[in-house]
Length: 226
Image (cartoon, rainbow, N blue to C red; front, side):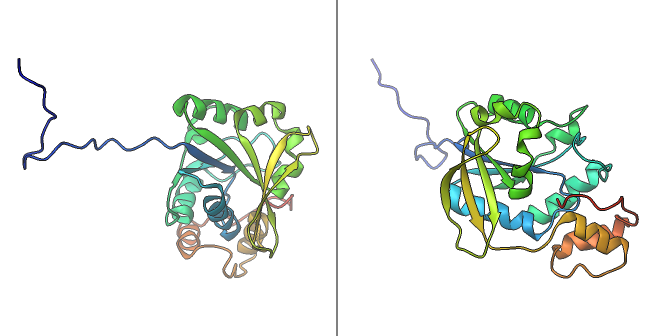
């Protein structure tokens, strides 16, 4: 009776599995990203630094049910997001909402992701502006069962996680503080439409893409910053 031996590499050494480990802690950062700016990337980096994430998914909104203006074409927003977040490790831009027909709802995105990664824990990232309107989101009461809610505040204090509660439902969430980044997509669109310089609010590659494709030549009336 012969004993079984492990498969060997051509050099005779044991063969090692090359299958990558599945992510266990996944951040989900959704938004219009119209355009993505330095505030968005600062929030993403703070989340990676302090939530011990294996993967951060940046998910541009598809059809935004809550926006009073039409969004820029989804392919442009995907391309700009890839340029803005491309240099941040462990980060991937996901076009699942843009590919989906009908309005984009975060609760549906999280359910789809939980099916794709059944063993992972999810962290839903949002800024204070988004959190203030969270109670109006579709099936907002289901979100805490699908992901840990993480709200990033704009402050000059060192990044820090603190437990707190969302006022709309008493759902627990983590508060992620980060350095202040004074910019918004609304202000950037208005500046570009008026021919003004956006300074350092945009990554150079994103600014070049906007100029190349002549985006934001006309805008809708001012709305809540995004």
